[in-house]
Length: 400
Image (cartoon, rainbow, N blue to C red):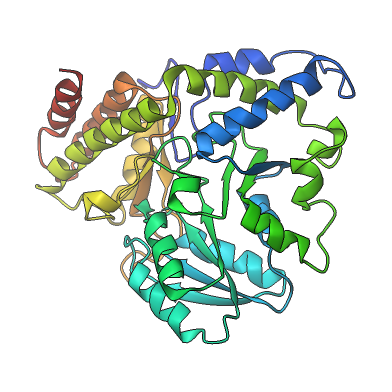
């Protein structure tokens, strides 16, 4: 007998659960991409995208995943042979660095312990050592999806300003935007980027690069920029075709319109608060489970934990067994660990992640946690009792 029948729940850190309104909006015939309702609708997306990023700057839209956004941000601001600084708190910091190296950019990486956020003091040291100011940009991942560590972007702006260093501050908000609080203009990010498949609740396939006037001025001084990645015609199109460097991702745009309507209706501050409460409920359960067994959260300090994704360790073979049980017996898919390994777990199968981003509410989180607790019991994995009760208490207190 399997108890997995019924609607499955995808609890991975992106693609996130898509709202029915988004799915309905996308279920239509192909539209005219040259004139009429679609071009008019897309122009209206721009202010709502800026609302989510908290910026009065510019936005360029791309048909790509987040890796494309990495390349777009670099292609417009850093030339071959120039230098970037990458404080890497996890796999995705290293991924952005790899992208830079592929473009012929000299890349200085600051390694960080697993589960730790970016250390602004170490960034300050690197900037102070850069007497010739060769570093053109600091590439900072706001939430590294592999470790779930959340870094302080405003602190990086402070160290750049204190050093009098002209490097651009770039923020990867692929996991965080629309989930964790992010204030592009107030925090001093020059470039911010995200994808469609997490907090924006749309299928993978679109990426967005936000940039301010300072970054735009750097782009104007570039000797050349790939025509496809160039953000100038995308942010200031003379015709609809230029928004996307060719044919538009029509059905993604309809879904995005529906998702942005939902975000506007709820309000970004309320969305941040909802994610914070649901994340706190997850942590409460995990902390109880860890009191009686090997269950542990990768990020020890709550202040540095993402509200969109939580990375955990059970150790091999428990992690893989738990993920298999929740999927086959309860219809809940947990995220795999990325870039994780230990001497006793070389494949990283003891690590896994909860995605709790976007279209998510209390009963979905409590269902996820109840499933995990049932799996721990069914598999005989030692754990503290009462995790779901602790989570329910967090939610009860938030609503009182």
